[in-house]
Length: 245
Ligand code: NAP
Image 1 (cartoon, rainbow, N blue to C red):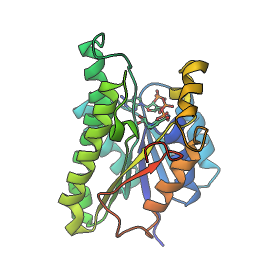
Image 2 (image 1 turned 180 degrees about the vertical axis):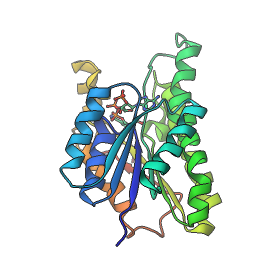
Image 3 (image 1 turned 90 degrees about the horizontal axis):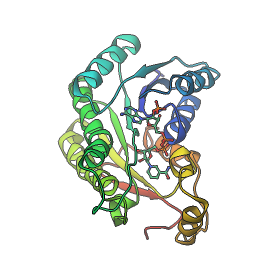
């Protein structure tokens, strides 16, 4: 069977890294996009290579329309095609609305939401021409529930759900799927930045009583892109230890 090519934004660290490694286990060739941490990107590529698949990393700010367009073109030149797009790159800049700076609102929306729009837009005609493609957007439970102190982040993640359903409706007739995953609290550097006290309080809100692991998300991405889930589109799947039920 022909090898699939997967593009994972924010594939250098955390959840994106786990997704990249898991899809490499499925023998997909892997292109990862990162924003600045060269060392982490290189280390992840070295780990991916152990699966004997092709891999490369691309430094690109997904919030930048031209840069993300150029990067998709370069990936198509290097890999020949794209089968799977995982929009995972994301940041937080938390604060109450009262004190939140406009720049912090914009930065989070530009990377988390507009970045995914850019990537989908730049892959769109390629997917249409090939009548195949699979998009997975990494949203968040707070996109479903909201969260005090995360108005920008929650809005970006709720927006991703609207983007997912719209893309799914536009692309379904070509058998191109677009789904979203809404992780709860997962052990990564993003949540590692919270204080011990905040982490303890959050664990208390999780029915399963503990944080999830990046691999919990990666496993679902592997299923959604395996070819065994091709009748699932426009769906939002929580992986959150019961947090938002
Ligand atoms: P993380 O450990 O902080 O990693 C973030 C990744 O995104 C890194 O690879 C980073 O690249 C990349 N990135 C950041 N800004 C970028 C930009 N402008 N352009 C391209 N790449 C960029 O984050 P994580 O915890 O794994 O989270 C991954 C995704 O899951 C995010 O969308 C996040 O919102 C979502 N999520 C996380 C949790 C959680 O509990 N951790 C829960 C729900 C949803 P560099 O390495 O170069 O910085």
